[in-house]
Image 1 (cartoon, rainbow, N blue to C red):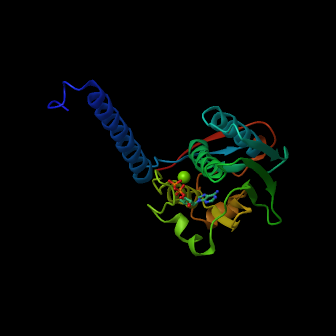
Image 2 (cartoon, protein in one colour):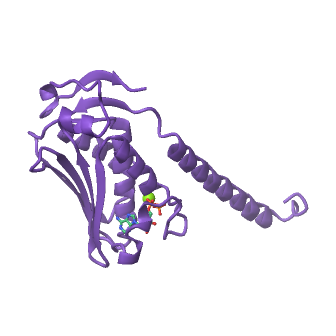
Image 3 (tube, helix red, strand yellow):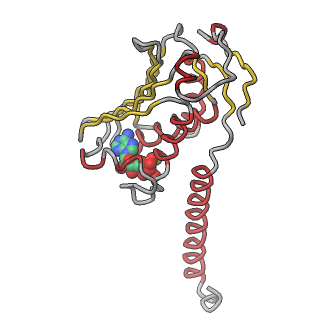
Length: 222
Ligand SMILES: Nc1ncnc2c1ncn2[C@@H]1O[C@H](COP(=O)(O)OP(=O)(O)O)[C@@H](O)[C@H]1O
Ligand SMILES: [Mg+2]
């Protein structure tokens, strides 16, 4: 750039390349940091509907989704879940971004939450995007697997790790050219949390976090 300092067009172009590369490297470093240090989870009993609504509002504030319709369908009377809200936010943010990336020509994404037969709570993110080919269904959760020109391939790997730390499960179903559903399955009672090796300190009374309110039990882990 110094040698070409007398050519303003080249200086501008090279300056732009340097800027873009720095931004790209920043993205990689941030992605790696998030993956290697998701942070010590701060679990608390939370209302599912309140958590999902909060997360979606914040996520949508920062997303360009002009051609994508977003619907939220969350029952109010779901059992509370024992979660780190910031980490669950990160998972929903990853899933929403992926859904929107999968619909360059528009479509809709729906976030829904419901109670399962065994007392668990499921949160689903469904899109009408390009879908995932059968041969990639396992690979999508692997670190650095990406099909996007500027993808990092860390979003789902990190999300899966976070969900696992919650004693929860993450599942995916997909059809090429039709769409994809990611399902998060959270345990809701003390017995299930214990069985998952979690939450010795989870309070047994989680009733105050049902519906609209959130009850923090101050359960700092580690
Ligand atoms: N909703 C989705 N629809 C279609 N493909 C998806 C979806 N979510 C994830 N994928 C696939 O999984 C890959 C990995 O996703 P992710 O780990 O978030 O990394 P990245 O978004 O950086 O590519 C994506 O590149 C894409 O191929
Ligand atoms: Mg992603």
